Image (cartoon, rainbow, N blue to C red; front, side, top):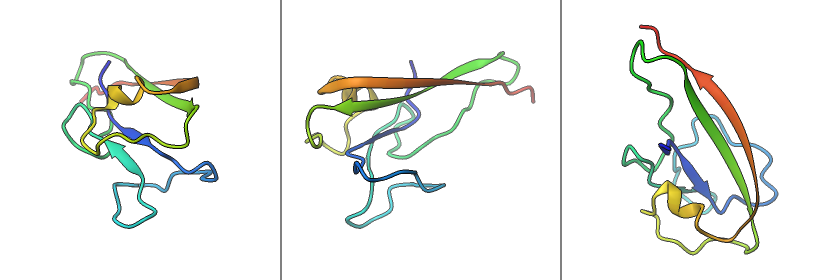
Length: 98
């Protein structure tokens, strides 16, 4: 599975993510893991042209600890090795035809 974005230590009172959230500086910045493109921000769907429908999984985890004490350059999959209590998943599809 390819990781496009990993966000962690989301405040429990946050009810939405701002469009184009991208690691803004300051105390309110979201912690973002390094994705499989090698970036610490969201990289959207980029399936090869004519490659057919790709499935994109959006996963959300509830933890049994207040926050993760992992380095900023942690990869996306490392987040799922931590203290996950519950998780939810939504699957979307996308295809590029040109």
